[in-house]
Length: 246
Image (cartoon, rainbow, N blue to C red):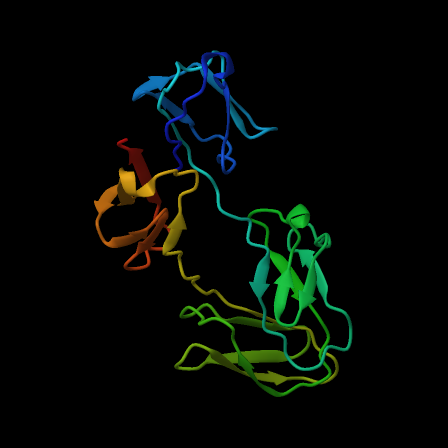
């Protein structure tokens, strides 16, 4: 949730357009308050990212804008690559089998360009491996319980997750080149630090932090930067409000 502070201009230069710091989530409501009263005298120009008032608010008005935005997309994903690759990996979408545009692998990281990113699609990575038999794979993230899934193009593979949840032991049978798919789920650490932009006097106003609609005081603030004492749940909605009292 982002807010503007006070704005004072000479009458002949009163603004009607306000650039939002981030693009609102598509289909989500945008609310504007002029001197504390709800205003419906505006529209949002998605092309320019501006809030456009049909007529300029009065001089020295306090204008507040509230909206939700989506964070992302994530374009970098940690991978587990086993052994020496004998061919360039194939990177494609599971449903359509079409290649992922602009996708590449650097080290153990899959990088997807924003132009090739399709929300909700599952990406498959396949490559040939010369070796077979026993493998010990170190995972970049702790795997969630019962989330390990391994498939082999020839023969079969079994997987055992270590107590640390950071290593997987694979026992594969069969001969010749194999394509081994190893997938697992992991939980990303949620953000604990948030920065509210366009706050001219952060120490002069009142700050409010809510998590899933419940007000909390378990945070510290330095200027316009809010740091939660504990990470919220991955699905939590964190709302930060600033009200200028000057």
